[in-house]
Amino acid sequence: MAAERSGHLLLSSHSAAQDFKRFFPEYKQTKTHVVQFSPNITLADFDIARRTLESAKKQSLADRGYFYLPNQFWIHKNHKVVLEALKKVSSDIKVVATGYTSDHRNASHFSELQSFIEEYNLQDKFVVLGLVSRDEVMSLMAGAIAVINPSFFEGWSTTVEEAKVFGKRMILSDIPVHREQCGARAHYFEPNDANTLGVLLEQMYEAKGEILEHSINDSASYRNLELSQKRFADGYLNALEHLYDDTLLGSKHNDK
Image (tube, rainbow, N blue to C red):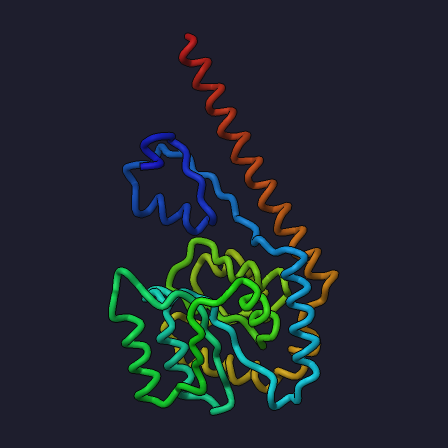
């Protein structure tokens, strides 16, 4: 509908632009503009992250360390591969998951995940908190060994952008948009490969002391956010300039 009405389409990633061309070849004349958005992280968020990490460092190493999975419980978010991986790893490894627990496209999805958790006694390894406040998201991200996104599909992941700003370790499904977002900055696994994910979890858990000790540097985080915002601003300005030029050209044609 957007393509039909304007002839221009604003997308959040080059991966999404490729998907548009692949799924809607009939709109090949539509001009696509990619603007990779920046996360809305405030000074208050930085303060929460700092206090969380300072508190975590006071705990014993045995009490520290979890992985954070901040995705809605929608079927394409692929929580199942994380559960499969947790079946194979050390009993000390824990994943904390937050997000809306209902999927309108698959009403039984969350209950099926719960049944799997119960069947394999993963209650202590996979902790579901459901919807939490923004402050809790920032705190959980700051205190995590790494942020996980196992999704089969994303447009441009907000949680990945937030993790990038804070300089967190990331374990991501190997899909084009994640590669576009992170390049060599993340650890990747095929979305259905629970074995590789399990190995990555164990390796990072073994190194959790060093990871948490060097996690979140204020000056680096501010710089990361600044660069992210500049990328967004430049991309948006570029899209507007192209739209203006196209509109101006169209007006000249109409005058003739």
